[in-house]
Every structure is written in C-alpha cells, then in structure tokens.
Image (tube, rainbow, N blue to C red; front, side, top):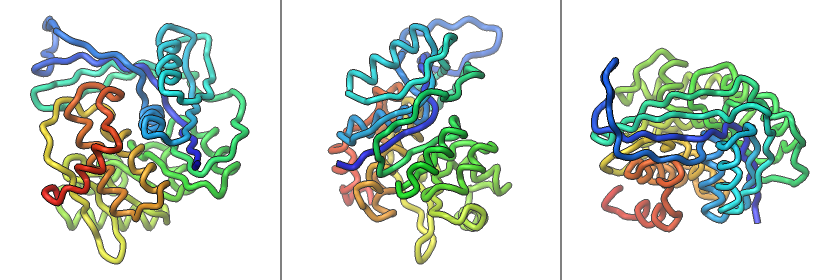
Length: 297
C-alpha cells in the first residue's frame, strides 16, 4: 500500500454559527458551535486517512486540552501522528461561519513556538503533502524522500511558500496567492492564463490554481478550466484543505491531472454544504459518484 506523509499546521477549530456577520460593539447570541481538530495539513491528512490511505501526520501541538483532543481525534481514525508537544498552548482558530451565505472569517491564535523539533519518521513514503507552516522540516523531508511525489498547499503569499514552491512537483495555489503573486485579478479567463504563465515560469513545476466555486485552472496542451459543481454553501471552512487532500489522493492513485482536479473540485464543493472542517469531509464514494455524473460536466 502506498504511504503519505503530511507535514504542517494542526490547530483546534472553534466554529461559531451566525445568520449575519457580527456588528462591532454589539452583542450576539449563537445557538450552535462546532469544535474539532483542524489546520491545513491535518485536514488533508484526516481526509486521506478516512479514505483508507496509509497516512502519517507530522506537526506541533500544545500541552493542553486542545492538544489532547487533537490526539484523540487522530486516534479515532487510526491516523499515526508525530507530534512535537510544547509546554504551552495549541494553535487555535476561532471561526465565524455566516450560514446565510457560506462565508467564514478565521481568527487564528498561533503559537509562535509551533515548529517541529521532534524525531524524524523512519518509514518510506510515496507522497509528501505540505503546507507553509513547517518550512525547515518540510525541506528536510523533501531532501530525505527525493523520489516521493510532493504536493504543496500554497494557500497564502509568504516566504515559506515561495521557498517550498521551488522544490515540489505539484504547486497547488489559491486564487488569493495567484492574485498577490501576479498582481492580477483572476476575474477573466485571460487573466487566469497570464497568472498561470507567471507562476509556472517562476516555479517550473505542475501548477494548479484553485478558483473557489468556479473550479480550478491549469494548462496541458492548452489552458483548461476544470469546473466545480453547484452547491448551497453553509460553511467554507476547510474546503481548500479538503481539495488538497482529495487532489493528493487521486494523483497518488495515478489519475490524470484533469481528473484529479475534477474530483478535488467536487470534494471541496461538497464540504461547504456542512459546518466545520472535519465533519464536512465527504466520502470517497460520494466524490466519485458526483464527479462521474454527466449532469455536472
């Protein structure tokens, strides 16, 4: 069985559901909140493990209640983890989910010491899935496993993404990253083409640009916009992480790039119909069935 190592951020998510975005200096009562483990790389690892991929996660937690809950949730799905445990707090995200339109605002209290300093895994891996939160250790893993397929979640414009982007096989970036890197607004197909060329020329690898509800964009013999599906959004938290996890799954299984993008679009879209990152992850069967439905093509 092929093995995947996911390296990067793990956090504890506290999602507050509201019908409208809060007004400053006002009080608001919420009827519901959802709590679970989260973080970009951890969400991808959780999806892969749930889809029966032999997956290991590597990241940093604190010595607190949230850290213990993250351990517990990983154990529940038999996701092996190499945790570097700090004596202080676990990185925590407080998420305001506006269920009236599916938007979310994330406030993250990140531990400034959250860098992995524990032991290295001894297993061999066929794929590395990385985000930008463990730069030094990610570089070490890329050097240690030169033959592994490497996928980078380039969700934001930062020095860590720019460094790792030069080392990976698949540079899967967000619309936000693409717009900030190229200074282009990706509101037209022509600008998507121009942005793709600038990014691919710089990183010289397989580039995919995610365009939220519109799908994802790349180039083979010609430029291709792979469409997503129409859904009623409730909470978009973790949708990008789920996209990256699903994309990694289908690439690992040998699917062609466009098909991997298609299924990843579906996985991310289905997730926004539910609240929270972990609870919103669709099953592999559902993703394939919806992705194969000609009505959505």
